[in-house]
Amino acid sequence: MSDKKTTGIWKVISASSMGTMIEWYDFYIFGSLAVVLSTKFFPTDNPTAAFLSTLATFAAGFVVRPFGALFFGRLGDLIGRKYTFMVTLMLMGGATFVIGCIPSYETIGFAAPILVLILRLLQGLALGGEYGGAATYVAEHAPAGEKGYWTSWIQTTATVGLFISLMVILVTKASLSKEAFDEWGWRVPFWVSILMVFVSYLIRKNMHESPAFAKTKAEGKTSTNPLKESFGNKFNLKFVLLALFGATMGQGVVWYTGQFYAMNFLKTVQSIDSSQVDMLLGVALIMGTPFFVVFGWLSDKWGRKSIMMTGMLLAILLYRPIYRAMYTSTDLTKKTEIVAQTKVVPSIKEVDATKMDSIYTTTKAYTDGTTVEEIKTIHFEAGKVMVDDKGKDKIETKVTKMINSSDRWFLIFMVFIQVIFVTMVYGPIAAFLVEMFPVKIRYTSMSLPYHVGNGIFGGLLPAISTYFVTNAKEAGDVEFYLEGLWYPIGIAAVCFVIGMIYIDRKINTLHD
Image (cartoon, rainbow, N blue to C red; front, side, top):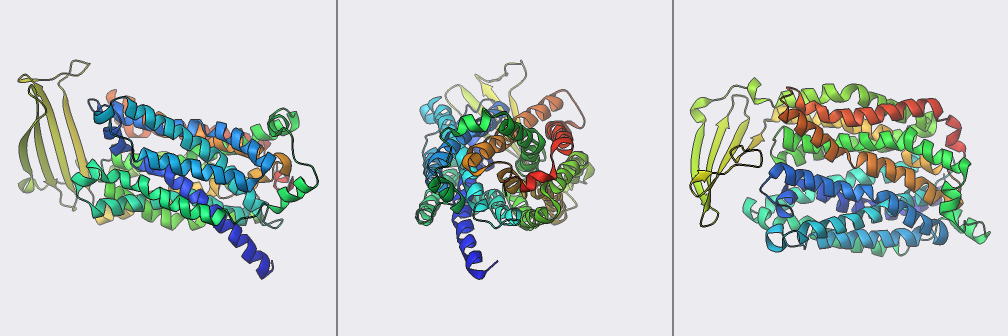
């Protein structure tokens, strides 16, 4: 490729990637702060239910992504790629900023979770239109035979967005006291996004329409009804369904397991300090992100199918061993406590005239360098221990572990392996989808299966898997922490079988 063409496509990628990265950032700060948000926007009398409600609200944004794909995909095929994802950028940024401004549940009651839900739905609609536009825009600028490589740069934006969200949260936490962050500092990452959106808007407004779409429009060959041509045409519908059940469905669950499920597992199941989790996840993402481009480039040489299917198969076979090893690495029953260093500090917190909390803060140290803080809260009313809806004493125990360097690097490696699976299934997927559909209905046709696979099958993963784990734990299952993996393993297995049987290598050049 000539230097001029290379410079041109790098400008396209930079403009597309920055906006897409910001939209992913906006989307992920909600998930990254799920534990904190559950205490701000939902009733706190049942922490588990509040956390599950937060995850369900997070998932709601994913569920509506297909509707955003249909709405904005149709606009993209009618009026163009550029203007459509300018709208999605502003919608996402505005919704994210407002989430950071909503008063807490204690201030406005149930209006808080309702407002958050509405804004999450707007975020989901915006993201549903953003990705397809960016991927299509880059692919239509890329030379034939190199779409996998060039579109893989767009694929890095989701992980980069997650990484930046983690870093912004870490910096905010480091700049404030624990009390200040808990009171108002958690809002800062939401506010920061508006500045990045403004910069991206300035860059995007100077972009030109993609040459493929401009040519199609000049020739009068654009679709007059993209939805009907995409899903009313049996031949095209067959490829839409194949893209969903043979590729994006499995890709979606592998993506969210390797990043979001891993993060929630480390924080809620392994009880590792939130800042340590953000840091080790950030390191694993830095190490793994270049492989999006590696596998995108290889997909131009070896074909999309072989790389994506290999990534799914490895995930299916290795998830349970990986998570068993992760859990065991910080299992306190396998560590030696330094009993002489154990301290218990009791305190009393008055809630109101009739209610009070008796709090016992226990700190422990272990020979391998691990330290643990255990906060046990017993709720009293009128001098008696309160009971929950199951008749049990209302006692909450929160454990936070600060793990040693050896365990941190082991967990970084375990997450890194999962990120490699992610890069294998996700790196080639944009080129794979673009090549399946003709220019005039490409935006609409590729966006729907992508966002159903990621938004519904992938987006529901945190809530469904957490539910499985919670039930297994309450039932006394010794390996309760592995039960949540059956969902991604099952979905990926079905997708792997369908993909291996029905995906043909010819799809690579169908509309190249």
